[in-house]
Length: 331
Length: 308
Image (cartoon, rainbow over all chains, first blue to last red; front, side, top):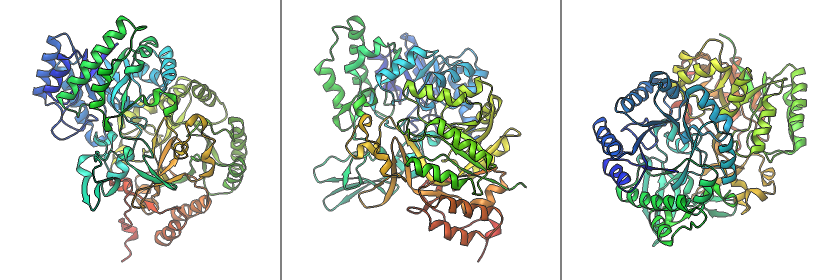
C-alpha cells in the first residue's frame, strides 16, 4: 500500500518525503484545488523545487486540480493541468469531467487519478471515468463501509485509494453544498469549505460564539475550547436536543483496520491535511509509514501501537478519532 | 420563444404509500407536463416499489404526462447497484441519472437520459461530453447562478434541454450517516423508519432558533425553500426549457398553479405573495443571484416588473 501525504507548502513536502511518504499531493495557489486557502499552496517556482526534491529521492508528486470550473474560469484549470504536466508531475488528481476530458486529450500519456471530489462510490461510476478518460486510480469518498469498499475493489477496473487519516468529511465529497448555502462559497466552486473569510469569533458573556456568515455554528462556555466553525461539526437544535447533529469535531483514523484494508486490496492510503503545518505532516507521515511497514511485514501479528494512536490523537480535531463510515455503527 | 414547461421533481421525503398514490392522482390533472418518479434518497424506503412506480408512470402517461424515473443519488450497497441496473434497463421510461453510475449504465446501453441536480455539470465541456453520451436534458446544479447559466446556455449543444430547480428545499448534501435516525439516537441499521414522521424533513435550528437546515434521512436540505418565481422572465430569456417544482407535503399543486399562471404572463408580484404563504418556513433564492444560497433577494430586478 502506497502512502500518499499532503503538502500545502515546500517545508511540508520535505517533511512528507523525509518521513517516508511514497507520494505527496499538492495544489496550486488558486481556486483550481479544494484547499484554496490564503498563504497555502504552490507557485510555479516552488512547485518546480517540490518536484525536484521529491523525485530526486525516488518519491512521486501528484497535483490536485479537483474543483469544478465554470465557463468563465475554465482557462485557469487548463493552465494548472499544463503547468503540472510541463514540470513532470507523476499524476494529476482530477474531479471535473470537463477537465478530465481536456487533460486526457492534451496529455494522453499522463497518469490521471480520479479525485474523491468526483464523488464516485460504485464500480459503474469508476468505469465511466476509466472508459472515457483512462483514469488509472480512484480515490473513494468516505461514505463506504469496509465491506462496501471491498466490493468496489473486486469490480473496479482500476486500483483504489482510500483515506487513512485526517479531518473527516461526513458528507459525500463533491456533492456537499452546505458551505455555499451559508456563504456562497463551496468546495466545488471556490475550493474551500466554511471559508475563513466568513468566520467570526465573538466573545460573549459566558463564552464564545463561532459564526459562519452570521449563522451561529456553536457556542462554547467559559473554559471550553472553541473550535473552528466547520459547518457540519457545530452544535444545533433538533427537536428538544442541542447536540452535534451532523458530526462531532473528530478525525478519521484507520490504524486499527490497516490489515483489513490491505487484505481487501486497497492500493494506496491517503492522509488528509494540506492546510496543516509541516509538523503535522511529519508526525502523521512518520506514524503511518511505521504502521504500514509493520502491517505489510506481518499483517496477522499487527497491532497499532499506543504510541502511534497517541501521536495521531494529538493532531486530531477535538483530540478524538473515529473509523467513520468504514465502521457500520457510525452510520 | 417557447413557453417553459413545468415538471414535478421526485418526492425527496418518505411519505405513506397512500399519500404518494393520491399525490400522483392529483398531479395527473395538474399543469405540470413532466413528472419524475422514484426514490432518490434511501433504498430502505420501500413502501412504493419499482413495480408501483412503473404502474403510476403508466397512468400518468395516459393522462398525457411525460414520465421520467429518477435514480438513487448516493450508491453504497451492492443491492443498490443491482436495483439501479434494473431501473436503467426498463424499456418504458427515460431515466434521470442522479449519480454518474447511472450515466454509465444508460450510455453503455445506448439510451437517452436526463441528469439530476446532483450530477456535477459546471462547464460547457462537461455538457458537450454528456450530450455525446446520450444526455437529452440536464438540471442545473442548484449552487450555480444566472450568470453561469447564461454562459452554459451559450455552450449547450443543440437539442439539449435545460431544467432549473425552481421551487423546493435545496438538496445540499448526502452522507453515509442517517441524520434523522441519529436525531432519535438510533443507528441507520435500526432506523425504525423515523423519516415517515417528518414528511417535509426534520428541522435543524441554530442555538439562536434560526431555522437553518432540514434532515431528511441521509440527505441534508435547506430549511428555507428555494424559489425563483421572480426570476422567471430572466430564465425565459435565457432559453430555459423546464422549471422543476420539488414536491412538499402540502400545497404542491397550488404551487404548480402559481408557476403556471406566472409563465402565462400574469403579474408576478401578487403570485409571489401567494406563493410565499404556501412555504413551510420562508423563501431563499441566493444561489440564483450568485449569493449565499440562504439569502433572499426580494426585489424584482428585470425590466418587465419595474413597478415603482
